[in-house]
Length: 424
Image 1 (cartoon, rainbow, N blue to C red):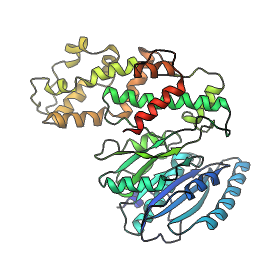
Image 2 (cartoon, rainbow, N blue to C red):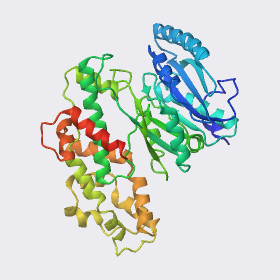
Image 3 (cartoon, helix red, strand yellow):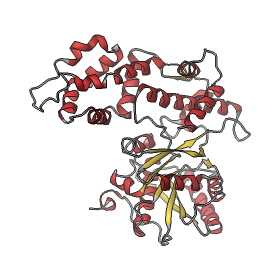
Image 4 (tube, helix red, strand yellow):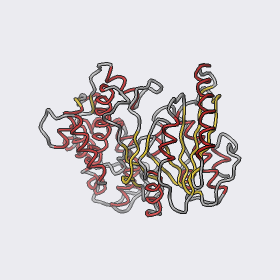
């Protein structure tokens, strides 16, 4: 059974046959977006990959129970965008505007809209027999640098084993499009995002990457083999991209830049738009304490000890065998935040299972981090925040991480983190 027989929700939505050399498809969910053409123009102005055609698929969508005025605005956007696409499609770059006005209310949202667009892209790659085609995610309020298409294509060409990648991004920090308050708020929020990922990396989590929905790409064959995009109404990017981070060859594209919008939004319960709205409303913006990641680093530093426990001999997978009371014997060697979390997660039982299925330290580490992945790391961070280390000001956390004295400016700190990310 093919991916489309198991997972696709719609039949083919684009009748036009793809170019034989189609290699890159940019997918864009669009819900009540007034400035879609600004994003499309940004793509249209890009330099094109050589000897490789590109398509852009926009899914203008709304729920079946959406407000009628919103549906009217979407319908107007469809007409404007289709006219623009007809006038601006050219050799090597085609634009397709799809309208999905009545998505089921149970699942309607950004995840489903991304899935519709990405499924269509995968289907078009299958039509021409290009399983290695690249599906890119962008948002309808984001801009891109002029080398965006070329850089993504060249990265995957240079890294043939890469299944998926995150793409470097920068929110605008000044200008005339938004108020000074919004620019100040997005500076703090992006600083939080970058601090969090860097703190996880320093602690030793190998799958710590930025997961921004407008800045990720995946090969069609890997998209299908991993079950495609989910239908989450928020956080769909985090859950999607982290299906690929444990895979060999996962990449981070730093040779171009996506520029997401810093605007406020109340469409989803968390994320950029919600955070910016809360900050400009006067709510103090805090992030996780660096002490949480210090504890996590201590824990990860004991992975080899976990493997060598019981003399370093792989235990037989007998249901009666235990790990010699690992947690009880070693409680004093673990931070309290880690110990209490491991008890909740039945760590002794999990440790036995991991050891029973691995014969070498390398195999043990790989299997260990398949269990203690980005999802479980976030769960631990929240546990430690709620019970041990309260949130702190984002500037203080970032300064401490970088070894700088308190009182640093959020913008200056963010620029340091950006430079670190560009060098990855």
